[in-house]
Structure formats: structure tokens, C-alpha cells
Length: 80
Image 1 (cartoon, helix red, strand yellow):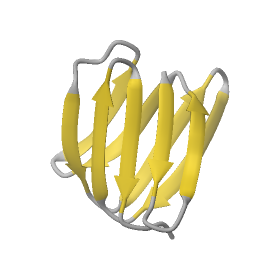
Image 2 (cartoon, rainbow, N blue to C red):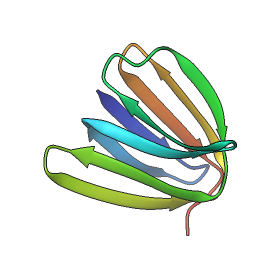
Image 3 (tube, one colour):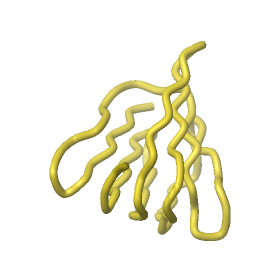
Image 4 (cartoon, rainbow, N blue to C red):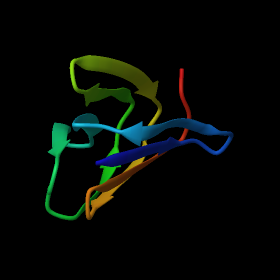
């Protein structure tokens, strides 16, 4: 899956990942390969990116996420 994390100022992350956990408005949820298409609002919290055995975490300040055809885009209002 390809993931992009964007803020109004810059691109925070772009690359291939095996899973992403995002802070949804109604609670955190994980996106895996071949996930059903989804658009969701996000709260302030951690985006956890897993790629193989590596794990990276980014703190975002709200935003939206869209996942379709194994492409995930996180539009964050900002980062800490």
C-alpha cells in the first residue's frame, strides 16, 4: 500500500507500508491491504505506520483520511 501524509506546509511521509493506524473521530482504526474504500475525519493523535518490522509514529492535529485501491492519503491540519 502507498501512504502519503500531508499538511498545509509540507509532505510529512510518503512510501510503501503494510498497515496504518489513524486516530478516527470515533476511535482509532487500522487500515490494511485491500481495505474497503473509506473517508474519515481524524482527531489529534498518533498515526502509526508499520512497514515490515519497522514502526514509525507521527502526531497529527486533526484532519481527514482517504483510503481507496491501496492508496492512503492523510490530510493533517498540522503536526506537533
